[in-house]
Amino acid sequence: MNQMEGTRGRAPVETAKKLPFFAPDLFETDRETLVELVRQTGLVPDQRFILGEQTARFEALLRDSLGAADVVACGSGTSALTLILRAMGIGAGDEVVVPAFGCAPLAAAPANLGAIPVFADIDPSTLVVDPAAVAAAITPRTRAIMPAHMFSVMADMPRLREIATSHSLRLIEDSAVAQGAVLNGRPAGVWGDAGVFSFVQVKSFGGPGEGGVVVTGDAALGAEARLLRNHGQDGVHRFVHHRIGYNSRFDEVLAAFQIHRYGSFAARLQRRAAIARYYTTRFHPLADRGILAPPEGRNGRCYYVYSLLLPRREELRQHLAERGIGAHAYYPLPLPCQPAFARFATPGHRWPSAERASARSLAIPIYPNLTDGDVERIADAVCEFADR
Ligand SMILES: Cc1ncc(COP(=O)(O)O)c(C=O)c1O
Image 1: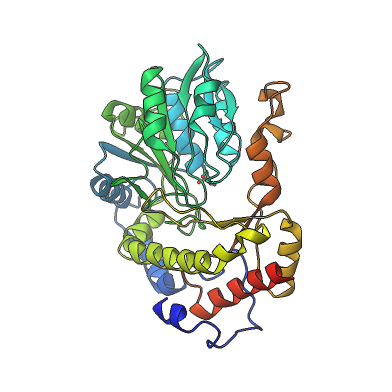
Image 2: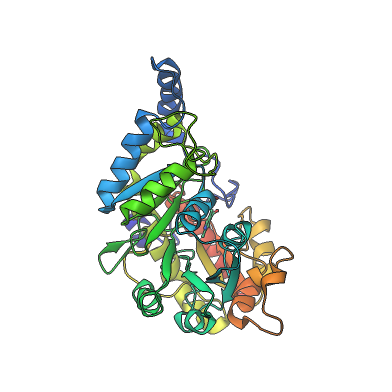
């Protein structure tokens, strides 16, 4: 990126190459390893393809690196949220305060357990849930607060912890998109009573398939999630079901591949951060033309997504598409305005910042294997749009 910083305008412009929003070649450098791990897994003598030795090693790697009491690998980030809610005993009629702007599992996970997602508006600049709105949404039926880190900004976990503690509520940290971020020296994932990561392809530590983990400092909660992920079995007595659980197990090939990729994870995060820094330098002057880059702050960020806020979102998307650059609008509707969740929306209540973010946010490519030339081309295209 140094090279990019020093050579703006002089680097060759790669006009012909398509730059899709989702990288088609995320695992290219590890392709051979992936094939070899499939082969090795196919040959292991005990023929365990799920929840075997590799999964245990992967769980231990994450647990030790985070300093958590337990890490429980499971089927997806969504499933990890479900396991946590179930392990906390949250169910019918309980309220869980979630952000009004975010991905569907935030509302679907409580709703699928018969609980009620209660939507709190977001901060208009950081796009993470506004702690004041969370506090205002608490009722005698509230059992948990479930903030999510958004795009590249961690939620205000210190403040949310205070609110949870002062109301005797559980704090669930949806860090599906923020693995690798650090706030005040403490990693994403360990701020709540439990947190989650997702390994779906596009995430910061995505892999070639579905997967997630529960991260917790509460060993009893971890043990409960462990039971629930495999139909209530304890891993010792087969076909003895202590709980009505789920099939949310973890794949051995993915575990082995993630262990392999862990060594290069920090470098990929750094590359994302360098791209983000460059974008922000280029886009900072566009603020007076209504195009806002993500705000600074909340220290060690994980640039999962780099999202701009602007009034002419569709025009920018079209402008980029004409130049072969993909862009993505996360999320075109606030959660309470989604047909699936509208019944949980308090009648007459509005979420103005979530509505504004849904109408204005546009994410541009930020995956680590973009070249400096790619990144310059994307930034040039955005700046050219702003100058029109
Ligand atoms: C904030 C957030 N929470 C939860 C999830 C669910 O993760 P998964 O897709 O692994 O189920 C996602 C991503 O999809 C997410 O972005």
